Length: 144
Image (cartoon, rainbow, N blue to C red):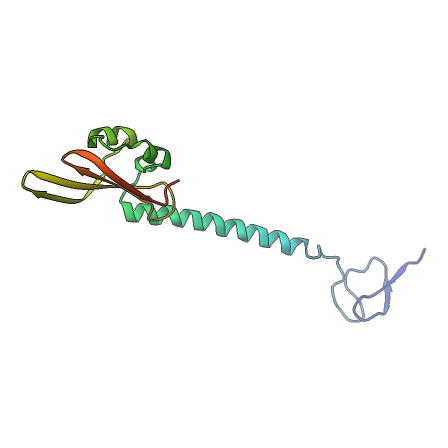
């Protein structure tokens, strides 16, 4: 068995146990190939995804002013809201008060639109329109 090997850089014969070529002075240690690069890439992707999710959550909190996620409306809660329900019945389903975004009164007729912020992407929300205290229409964007 040979006590020498060939330097992969300068092609000179060098001692088998050499970690640095005595001729070209280059390091001969074996690397991990692209495995290390792939691992770093995957870790960076995971960090990016986590940061994006956290940013989305932060934006939604800034938009809504809601600090507790339990106050967000879910798609399941939204689907339980029915025409004819009172504001209090809707609040019981969602578990939080909505934000009065519009109110109009004329000749004893009142229209109120309440907004609840959603648990989905930043800006997700649901609006419920109440006419004389009863839900008449609802709309949502981005709820989960």
